[in-house]
Length: 366
Image (cartoon, rainbow, N blue to C red; front, side, top):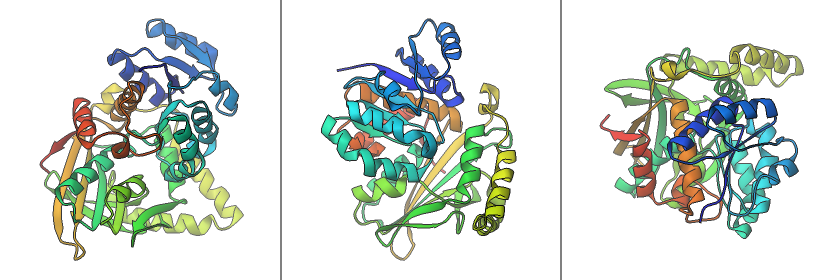
């Protein structure tokens, strides 16, 4: 049974990519956002789509867009600032939900707040269903399927090609903010918060050793529940491998500075300057990079049992496709579980692997 798919933030960079991906799937979503003039222009440009205004600070305006069984796809972040009222609106009316967040603290909190509400209404909520963090979750689940007795899992995110000019304003903002926020890891069968970039790990990517620094990822929230043998899950970012060790020092300094008001203001100012203008890379720039995710499963003595490598389109092209994929699966009733869940809880592993392959995220040998 299908309903209406509403894209909130449709005129933004990631929102528009998701809308275009839905159209390629034959789905005509309703466009939503704050600015009527921008929505009207985009809706007309894309073939006369329906549109409606809604404000993320006014949950009632979001609720009026939705009914039971509809699907809300939202890209409006930062989600810690703007996401909770939107998630509440969807859960309260029994609408399915998918978002593009990379903020693990937000995912943990909406699980705490809205999991029971969504379950009561039969709605499935899929936070962080984009480049953050579907590739790592899929790679990790495939690795654990091959090595079900593994106790430790390390996941690395890399890119082939330079990202110097290939990051959006939103990604830069999240990265800058993330250096002063804690990273959540799964250690000794418990979730614990540690300093971001407090550790590094090295992976072999396309035959070369590349280093990433410790970051948050929803893999630590969702994979241990399905694999009780796991004692440790950690996620590493290796977009800029030559800078990974330097970033560990930067993170330590930033955390020290933010303990004092003047230092916090300085870090905030530097972060603002570093994020650059709104928007993101165009199609030509996105075509210059590929994403690469690797999951390494080991035993208690740190012996590697298996590695799974996935490669796919650029960060943003892949995110748009994944959001559209999730929205369509939710709309057609393919989800197994209501509540706030991860990709592998919501859908069969084989379904996610096959659907991701269709949008270009496929296994590779290294």
